[in-house]
Image (cartoon, rainbow, N blue to C red; front, side, top):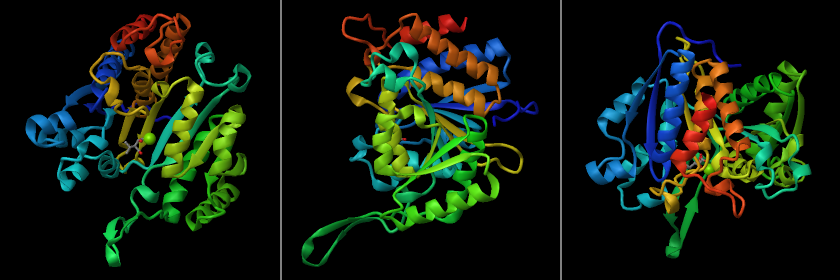
Length: 372
Ligand code: IPM
Ligand code: MG
């Protein structure tokens, strides 16, 4: 399902390191990207821009004008991380302007892919028995444009007698469900041909609609794919009891966030997980996208050079696959990460007690050595 290499003009990549450990892991990801571009002669240009808390501290804005313009130009953004909790002192409008949710909306990103595999050398690190981890290879398709993340009304309001009430709205239109579902089915065709669609149809109307729409689309267009429906709470259990049964997991914005993080333990550490967020292709064939590790800003270890860059590096592989159509380069990066792990490279989050630990840059070096 990857796109053919766009020969007409180069792919513009914009790196936004952002907050916390974002800049550190993005620097390693960029080293890998530059190496892949050189080795595979890829028509890709790279820009870097400042974004986030550090920019706010030095310039009074989370998203300065030149970053704004660079985002407009970019085909693919290589994103580090955002720390939304440490923004309390920033005016609400500026916070909203510089939020990841606004960026996703602006770029029209509608699905978030989160592949989860257990690399064999990390089976001991993951908090599961080796037999449970055998054959784990799934991808979450998280709907990214709707649900409780964007639903209106929302806010904190004061009720009579002064008690406050927080309100959020979980809402999905058929169109939103259809486009994510169609994407997931098409992806399943190139994999093991199985989809698990996850909802809470037993308590939520939006979940009941979700199930109806997925069922209808399966019947009309994708009968060659095996479809299961699963309640989100059951899915949470099955992800630890029998994770190898999952191939493509299709779910909404909030369940996708929660369940993919939970499933991250199967990979040994959240630090291992990459993600790709994609917009629909535009009429001119351009498909905007954002690639980021799933781990987030991790402010407790920021600036120490100890973060695991593999989630960011594997996000570069997704970028090359989905935005550059450079499947061979994507595979080479994934293989280099696997080989580095086989050779014993471990950052702190994936090391067993007593194992030698590499910092962020040294981990990048270990992957670069395998990439040749
Ligand atoms: C994620 C993150 C984001 C989300 C936050 C930073 C808004 O947790 O992508 O998993 O909840 O979507
Ligand atoms: Mg999350």
